[in-house]
Length: 216
Picture 1: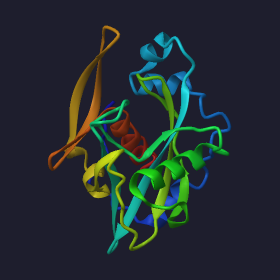
Picture 2 (picture 1 turned 90 degrees about the vertical axis):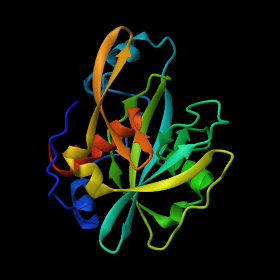
Picture 3 (picture 1 turned 30 degrees about the vertical axis):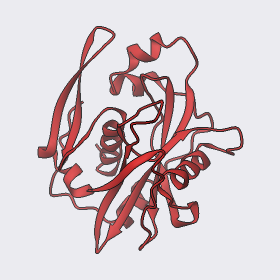
Picture 4 (picture 1 turned 45 degrees about the vertical axis):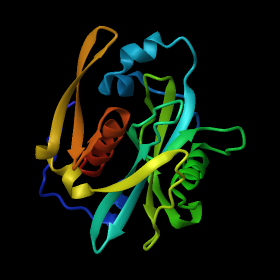
Protein backbone atom coordinates (compact mmCIF):
# COMPACT_ATOMS: atom_id res chain seq x y z
CA UNK A 1 0.00 0.00 0.00
CA UNK A 2 1.65 3.20 -1.14
CA UNK A 3 0.48 6.76 -0.65
CA UNK A 4 1.10 9.44 -3.26
CA UNK A 5 -0.86 12.07 -1.41
CA UNK A 6 0.00 15.63 -2.22
CA UNK A 7 1.48 17.32 0.84
CA UNK A 8 0.22 20.69 -0.41
CA UNK A 9 -3.44 19.67 -0.15
CA UNK A 10 -4.99 21.45 2.83
CA UNK A 11 -8.50 20.48 3.81
CA UNK A 12 -11.10 22.22 5.93
CA UNK A 13 -13.83 20.59 7.97
CA UNK A 14 -16.28 21.70 5.28
CA UNK A 15 -14.27 19.78 2.68
CA UNK A 16 -14.47 16.64 4.81
CA UNK A 17 -18.23 17.00 5.21
CA UNK A 18 -18.58 17.19 1.43
CA UNK A 19 -16.32 14.22 0.69
CA UNK A 20 -18.05 11.97 3.22
CA UNK A 21 -21.58 13.03 2.33
CA UNK A 22 -22.40 9.92 0.30
CA UNK A 23 -20.89 7.37 2.69
CA UNK A 24 -23.28 5.05 4.50
CA UNK A 25 -23.38 3.23 7.82
CA UNK A 26 -23.06 -0.52 7.12
CA UNK A 27 -26.20 -2.52 7.80
CA UNK A 28 -24.10 -5.58 8.64
CA UNK A 29 -21.05 -4.48 10.70
CA UNK A 30 -19.38 -7.90 10.41
CA UNK A 31 -19.39 -7.94 6.61
CA UNK A 32 -16.00 -7.27 5.02
CA UNK A 33 -15.37 -7.37 1.28
CA UNK A 34 -12.41 -9.46 0.15
CA UNK A 35 -11.10 -6.50 -1.86
CA UNK A 36 -10.83 -4.48 1.36
CA UNK A 37 -9.12 -7.38 3.12
CA UNK A 38 -6.66 -7.69 0.23
CA UNK A 39 -5.94 -3.97 0.16
CA UNK A 40 -4.82 -4.02 3.80
CA UNK A 41 -2.88 -7.25 3.37
CA UNK A 42 -5.18 -9.25 5.62
CA UNK A 43 -6.96 -11.47 3.11
CA UNK A 44 -4.96 -14.53 4.23
CA UNK A 45 -5.65 -13.79 7.89
CA UNK A 46 -9.32 -13.28 7.07
CA UNK A 47 -9.49 -16.68 5.37
CA UNK A 48 -7.62 -18.43 8.20
CA UNK A 49 -9.83 -17.17 11.03
CA UNK A 50 -11.79 -20.06 12.49
CA UNK A 51 -14.46 -17.95 14.18
CA UNK A 52 -16.84 -15.35 12.69
CA UNK A 53 -15.61 -11.77 12.89
CA UNK A 54 -16.79 -9.75 15.89
CA UNK A 55 -18.25 -6.31 15.14
CA UNK A 56 -16.32 -3.32 16.48
CA UNK A 57 -16.60 0.40 15.91
CA UNK A 58 -14.03 3.16 16.29
CA UNK A 59 -14.42 6.91 16.16
CA UNK A 60 -11.98 8.86 14.01
CA UNK A 61 -12.21 12.12 15.97
CA UNK A 62 -11.36 15.28 14.06
CA UNK A 63 -10.53 18.36 16.09
CA UNK A 64 -10.38 21.83 14.56
CA UNK A 65 -8.16 24.45 16.16
CA UNK A 66 -7.68 27.86 14.57
CA UNK A 67 -8.41 26.49 11.11
CA UNK A 68 -6.08 23.49 11.47
CA UNK A 69 -7.35 19.91 11.66
CA UNK A 70 -6.04 17.18 13.96
CA UNK A 71 -6.84 13.52 14.56
CA UNK A 72 -7.19 12.37 18.15
CA UNK A 73 -5.60 9.01 18.95
CA UNK A 74 -5.06 7.03 22.13
CA UNK A 75 -2.28 4.96 23.63
CA UNK A 76 -4.12 1.98 25.09
CA UNK A 77 -3.39 0.82 28.62
CA UNK A 78 -0.78 -1.92 28.95
CA UNK A 79 -3.13 -3.62 31.44
CA UNK A 80 -5.77 -4.42 28.81
CA UNK A 81 -6.34 -7.99 27.65
CA UNK A 82 -6.59 -7.07 23.96
CA UNK A 83 -4.40 -4.62 21.96
CA UNK A 84 -2.57 -3.52 25.10
CA UNK A 85 -0.15 -0.63 24.62
CA UNK A 86 -1.15 -0.03 21.01
CA UNK A 87 -1.97 3.25 19.30
CA UNK A 88 -5.59 3.29 18.26
CA UNK A 89 -8.70 5.35 17.75
CA UNK A 90 -11.20 5.24 20.62
CA UNK A 91 -13.60 2.36 20.15
CA UNK A 92 -14.35 -1.25 20.91
CA UNK A 93 -16.57 -4.26 20.46
CA UNK A 94 -20.27 -3.93 19.74
CA UNK A 95 -22.52 -4.74 22.68
CA UNK A 96 -26.03 -6.10 22.72
CA UNK A 97 -27.59 -2.76 23.69
CA UNK A 98 -25.97 -0.84 20.82
CA UNK A 99 -28.53 0.00 18.15
CA UNK A 100 -25.82 0.10 15.49
CA UNK A 101 -22.06 0.29 15.07
CA UNK A 102 -22.12 4.10 15.19
CA UNK A 103 -23.57 3.87 18.69
CA UNK A 104 -20.76 1.47 19.60
CA UNK A 105 -18.06 3.89 18.50
CA UNK A 106 -19.65 6.84 20.29
CA UNK A 107 -20.29 4.87 23.49
CA UNK A 108 -16.74 3.57 23.60
CA UNK A 109 -15.35 7.05 22.92
CA UNK A 110 -17.18 8.45 25.92
CA UNK A 111 -16.01 5.53 28.08
CA UNK A 112 -12.37 5.83 27.02
CA UNK A 113 -11.70 9.54 26.56
CA UNK A 114 -14.74 11.20 28.13
CA UNK A 115 -16.10 12.86 24.98
CA UNK A 116 -19.88 12.46 25.06
CA UNK A 117 -21.80 11.70 21.88
CA UNK A 118 -23.58 15.07 21.88
CA UNK A 119 -20.17 16.72 21.41
CA UNK A 120 -19.52 14.71 18.23
CA UNK A 121 -21.03 15.47 14.82
CA UNK A 122 -20.82 12.33 12.71
CA UNK A 123 -19.47 13.26 9.28
CA UNK A 124 -19.47 9.87 7.58
CA UNK A 125 -18.16 6.34 7.45
CA UNK A 126 -15.21 4.35 6.11
CA UNK A 127 -15.15 0.78 4.86
CA UNK A 128 -15.21 -1.97 7.47
CA UNK A 129 -11.83 -3.70 7.74
CA UNK A 130 -10.77 -7.04 9.27
CA UNK A 131 -8.08 -7.39 11.90
CA UNK A 132 -5.79 -10.31 12.67
CA UNK A 133 -7.43 -10.59 16.09
CA UNK A 134 -10.81 -11.43 14.58
CA UNK A 135 -12.66 -8.11 14.54
CA UNK A 136 -14.54 -6.33 11.78
CA UNK A 137 -13.80 -2.67 12.51
CA UNK A 138 -16.01 0.10 11.14
CA UNK A 139 -14.50 3.62 11.40
CA UNK A 140 -16.95 6.45 12.12
CA UNK A 141 -15.57 9.89 11.24
CA UNK A 142 -16.72 12.65 13.58
CA UNK A 143 -16.01 16.31 14.23
CA UNK A 144 -15.52 17.11 17.91
CA UNK A 145 -17.17 20.30 19.15
CA UNK A 146 -14.83 23.26 19.77
CA UNK A 147 -13.35 23.49 23.23
CA UNK A 148 -14.06 19.90 24.22
CA UNK A 149 -11.03 18.20 25.78
CA UNK A 150 -10.49 14.50 26.54
CA UNK A 151 -11.04 13.20 30.06
CA UNK A 152 -9.03 9.98 30.06
CA UNK A 153 -10.25 6.74 31.63
CA UNK A 154 -6.88 5.44 32.78
CA UNK A 155 -8.15 1.88 33.16
CA UNK A 156 -8.41 1.72 29.36
CA UNK A 157 -6.19 4.51 28.02
CA UNK A 158 -2.78 5.69 29.21
CA UNK A 159 -3.01 8.97 27.32
CA UNK A 160 -4.44 10.64 24.23
CA UNK A 161 -2.59 12.76 21.70
CA UNK A 162 -3.31 14.73 18.53
CA UNK A 163 -1.62 14.46 15.13
CA UNK A 164 -2.03 17.24 12.53
CA UNK A 165 -3.96 16.02 9.51
CA UNK A 166 -1.51 17.99 7.37
CA UNK A 167 1.34 15.78 8.67
CA UNK A 168 -0.55 12.61 7.81
CA UNK A 169 -1.42 13.92 4.35
CA UNK A 170 2.21 14.68 3.56
CA UNK A 171 3.39 11.57 1.71
CA UNK A 172 6.99 12.26 2.70
CA UNK A 173 6.00 11.29 6.25
CA UNK A 174 4.97 7.78 5.20
CA UNK A 175 7.22 5.07 6.60
CA UNK A 176 7.14 1.66 4.95
CA UNK A 177 6.83 -1.27 7.33
CA UNK A 178 6.96 -4.96 6.46
CA UNK A 179 4.82 -7.59 8.15
CA UNK A 180 4.81 -11.34 7.72
CA UNK A 181 1.23 -12.64 7.72
CA UNK A 182 0.78 -16.39 7.40
CA UNK A 183 4.10 -16.69 5.64
CA UNK A 184 3.51 -13.84 3.21
CA UNK A 185 5.45 -10.59 3.41
CA UNK A 186 3.15 -7.59 3.29
CA UNK A 187 4.35 -4.00 2.94
CA UNK A 188 2.24 -1.34 4.65
CA UNK A 189 2.47 2.33 5.52
CA UNK A 190 2.93 3.53 9.08
CA UNK A 191 3.43 6.98 10.58
CA UNK A 192 5.97 8.15 13.14
CA UNK A 193 4.76 11.26 14.94
CA UNK A 194 7.10 12.52 17.65
CA UNK A 195 7.63 9.43 19.84
CA UNK A 196 4.52 7.63 18.58
CA UNK A 197 4.44 4.81 16.04
CA UNK A 198 1.07 4.59 14.30
CA UNK A 199 0.79 1.30 12.45
CA UNK A 200 -1.46 -1.63 11.63
CA UNK A 201 -5.20 -1.16 11.38
CA UNK A 202 -5.00 2.39 12.74
CA UNK A 203 -2.58 3.45 10.00
CA UNK A 204 -4.74 1.73 7.39
CA UNK A 205 -7.80 3.64 8.59
CA UNK A 206 -5.88 6.92 8.30
CA UNK A 207 -4.72 6.08 4.77
CA UNK A 208 -8.29 5.08 3.82
CA UNK A 209 -9.63 8.40 5.11
CA UNK A 210 -7.02 10.46 3.28
CA UNK A 211 -7.49 8.58 0.01
CA UNK A 212 -11.23 9.16 0.21
CA UNK A 213 -10.75 12.85 1.00
CA UNK A 214 -8.32 13.31 -1.91
CA UNK A 215 -10.32 11.04 -4.26
CA UNK A 216 -7.47 8.60 -4.83
